[in-house]
Amino acid sequence: MDRFGESVTALKKQSKLSTGITPFIWAIAVLLIVIFAALYINVRTNNETILRTNIMKSTTQVANNIELRLTSTSSTMARVIEKLEQEGPNKEVFDKYGREFLLQNPEVILLRLIEPNGKGITSLVGPRIRNESFRQYNYLDYPPVVRDSIRDAFATKRVVYSSYWEIPYDSTSPNTVIIYPFTLNEKEYALLARISLSRLLEESVPNILRSDYEFSLMHGTELIAGKALYNPPDDFTIPSYIRSADPLPSSIQLYGCNLVESPLIFASPLLFWLGSLMLFLLLLLFFLYKKMVQNQNALDAATKEVELRRSIERSMLMGVLITDMNSTIIYLNQSMCNLCGYSENELLGKESPYPFWGDSTPLPSTILSAKDLNASELPYRFDITIRKKNSQKIKGMLLASPFYSQDGEQSGWIYLIRDNTNDFNSQTLINDAIASYEKLLNSVNSCISVVTHKPSGNILGMRNDLYVETMGSTVKGHQDISRSFHEPFNAEGKRTGDIWVSSMKKWFNVSESRITLPGGSHVTLQTAQDITDKKISEKNLEEQTNKMEISSRLITLGEMASTITHEINQPLTAIVAYTSTAIE
Image (cartoon, rainbow, N blue to C red; front, side, top):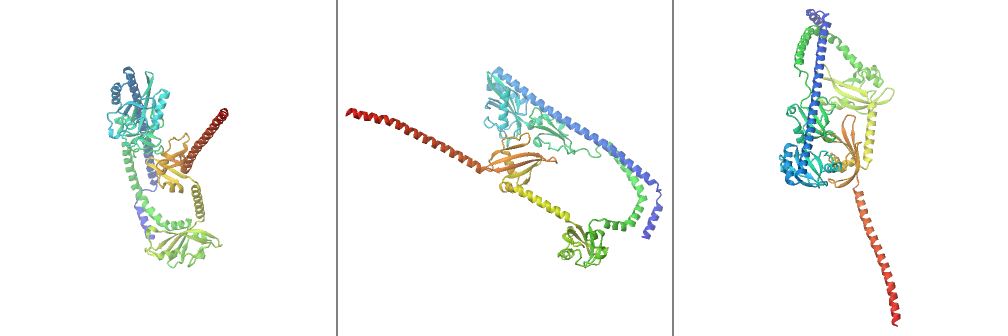
């Protein structure tokens, strides 16, 4: 140590820097860092503001284009109606002006002339549609949203836009329709234009925006059309913006986002060159300062090493116990003495069994010595019972590892021990609470499931045993029941009812609630009770009631026939009697 100190003194004499220059060097370094941080924050804030402003403007531009195209479609439909009124609602006139309409509006894939009941009179398919991937719905199998929109259009005499709807295996899906009602020769008609939302979005996005932005039509967080994946509003890594897509229904919104994330630190050339210059100056100051402090640091570290280690041992909240290979205690810290209540003198030199060893389990050293130790599994954990000096017993946790000498050979064992009573009691309470909660869920005679909705898909979370027994451990059963609902969620995000699930061939009484968790996740809580037997019983009861009504009617008819027969037989009998008397 003396030779090391002399070497450090010699190194300090070789340094040409004065000790008073140290604060000046640190002040310059801190000033450079503060200047660069201020510049970076300013440039980064300006860049993010510009990016967010640009995505808002671009999304608004696309929304305006959508509104313009849909308004233009309605206006063109009005001109077609005007031609039908002038030249008559025949197929030739409809084909002539309908084809012009389809050429002007490539997002329209079907134009149909319909009656108030939804029945189609004639229709035209867009010239770009392939028949093998396109299905023309007739008036009997329109989706519910289309039928509702047709009724609303004829009832209000106004142009109606339907909500979106999907068609499996149809390349034009998802779709929406525009219904334009009109009256001709005192008869009511309507033009129905079926619009592909994907093509509408594609036609509405200018080419100049495609290289920097992506856009999608969303229903909540569900992707309807487009390529942009939903990014939560609290995630600022990718600037995004969402707004209404008028005149489409309010449930459909336009979502836009940047193709790349926010700029990195040196995205700005000014920041790059300033950062490079400041880095050079900081490195220069570092090497300048290093000659002053490297020897002093080494000397201070050597001086404080022993004291630091001892302070760490005294400051540890866990008890430290070291034994030799014969399990004789050779060291313990103050925390170990406080834990067991024995003093250091009472435990040093003690051999197994130790006074604080509160159960009959063998020492960890005995167990570990009989097996091959794996470094990746160290330290080994044991749950023990500690008997304090006052005979009180507490739960403890022990971590055991081999203790090595300076030569790298094992010279004993080191144990870290702590009072684990509170953790043990807390875990017991948690286990009891979880068991009670699971028992409560499993006592309900309904299938309970919670599904988390994410852009990547739906994830099945909590469910009870009855759900697993009835529908398995996947999200499919929950989705099949939810898709069988014909009623939408109310304003509070709830819906209930008795529904028939065709995939399971069962009736269920279902209650669903949409919930937003504090973290922003969207989940659906579903409670489904199998009422198939009840429905069958109700149907059987209805059939028996019908049979009883028929039987009652037959009985009444018989009684009436008997009464009529009696009333006829009585005068006939009297006539026969009087006739016989007259003959006599």
